[in-house]
Image 1 (cartoon, rainbow, N blue to C red):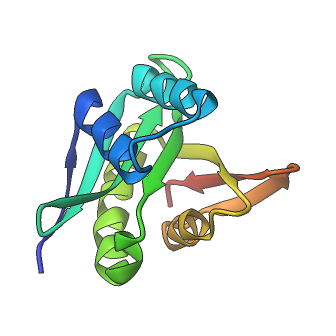
Image 2 (cartoon, one colour):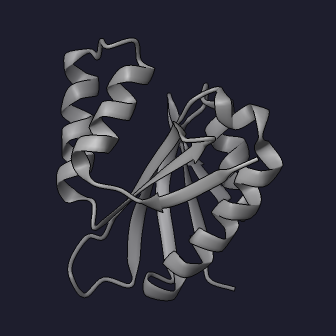
Length: 140
């Protein structure tokens, strides 16, 4: 089984997310995606046997920041290969934490796949809002 996580560009990331959503995004989803792509310092894609199945990026608040905002988009294919993705993601997150010792973000309550992934990566959940919960991953 071949699972790869690799640096990505904006066009490939946009295409993965657009395709996974059935070729249709709401105006709000499209605006959010474009903001994430525009401000991400690093983008990654994950694939299984060459088929793209997840994307994530890091958005630092400034060039000199020691923290970055982590966002994730995943498809159901990740669930089929959880263990391998977790192990690979943990290695990538450790690399990210060398550059940004604190990774923060928000996750939708309804997105159980993303919440599980974040827990596997060591996330601590914090403030709960009407639709989202904050999280933080710290360098050990």
